[in-house]
Amino acid sequence: MDGILKQETTDAVDTAILLTSSGVFASGATDSGQAMPSPLMRVGGMTLFQRAVLTLQRGGISQIWVLAGKEEPALRELLREDSRLQAAVRWLPVREFPPHDPQTWEVLADEFSGACMVVGCHTVFSSSLIQRLRHEGAQGNAVVVVGRSEEGYYAGNPNIVIKPKDIEGHSSSSVMFRDPPVAPTPIKDSASSSLPIVGDLMVLPGRLLGISGVLHASGTNPLRLALEQAAVEGTVQTIPGATHWFRDVRGPQGPKLAEQTLVRSLQTLKGGLDGLVDRYFNRKCSGLFTRLFLKLRWTPNRITMMSMVVGLVAAGFFVPGSWELALIGALLFQLSVIIDCCDGEVARLTFSESKFGQELDIWADNVVHAAIFVGIACGAYLQGPWEQMSLPLILGASAVLANVVSLLLVNVARQLRSRQRDWGKLSERQRHKLEFMLGHVANRDFSVVVLICAGFGLLHWFLALAAIGSWFFVMSMAWLLRRNLISRG
Image (cartoon, rainbow, N blue to C red; front, side, top):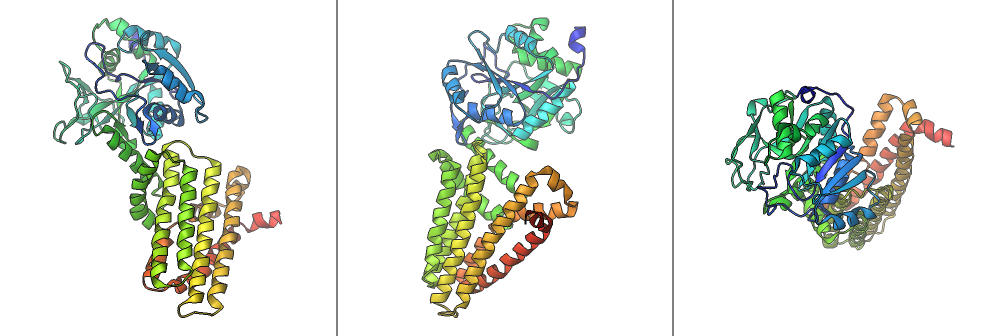
């Protein structure tokens, strides 16, 4: 037992064990698996298995051991030609390495040094949570993720709870085990349980992973025995699930709630760069479209093209200059903006971000904006107070030209940012201003201004403000990049 109590300090955890057909704390005797969703179930546009593997990879895990059942051939096929996969994946059939058998964990404990992450495939979680688990688990403690029961939320491990007084901070926490085991059931109301429940996502030091053979407790889940030993030692550390989010997919509402959590996490992620309209309106509406596109299995680039087509159609409605058609055009433009939010959301949800997709999105946005300026200019020339005057055409051409020049300057700034040596030569104030301008260059809040101006028949004034304001942006960006532009010249 002296070896068991020995503390260890390792580098960040880089190995994870993924259970595809059982819960982390399930036992062969009590777990029938009836409530366990298939790892092939699609949630948020991907199978649970793919999402778990790619989230672990993005969180910094470089080696993944998969304990798979009869679904192993199908899971292997999913990863066979997946270019997104960089982590090393090793397969262990559960018929030879059953998770409820202590010898399985003894064998795995011998395969690597330090700590290891153990994850249930029926849980969706954030990569930031994995990153925190990796670093917290490097201190030699057992680290568990905990969450409280919610209405409709499947409480996966009601037998294992944490005392409330120990839930805050990084102090060692006390684990409570309920015996006899309580059958896992969906929570029907928020008052069903007030104690934080341990989720199927944790880190165990190697010295605890194979502890079942030492403790000789037959019929008890080996990982529960390991957690019990850590509780006796006082080395259990908790991470509140609300900090980085995780969601158990089990239960009748599990997949729906998990997908809602995924979409909400994207809105939180982009909230710092979005404008007010994006944050409080466009993102709320885009979530509905994003879930639809995920069900249709549309690619992010296809969504980008759809957004551009809707935007170009909207621009066509401005050309005749009538109030009614202009209002329809403004509404279609707003729809285009909402759809434009979806390509990035789908890309992040399905781990399919790409440099080409980012460039396509930027160019599509600018094509639509230029078309909107042209459409409004034509409408102001054909009807309204500036009818048959050259002023609206001049303003429209000026706005389009400024849009093109600003796009070129933005590309220069992005290239500069990618070169760390040149980027470091700028002052901190210059870098801050450029970051601010790059972060808000795709701000879509002006779509609401277009809608308001269309409703009040003031699109010609919007055109004038856009033509002037665009050049202010161009001059500001050019001034910040003046040295880089001179050296290029």
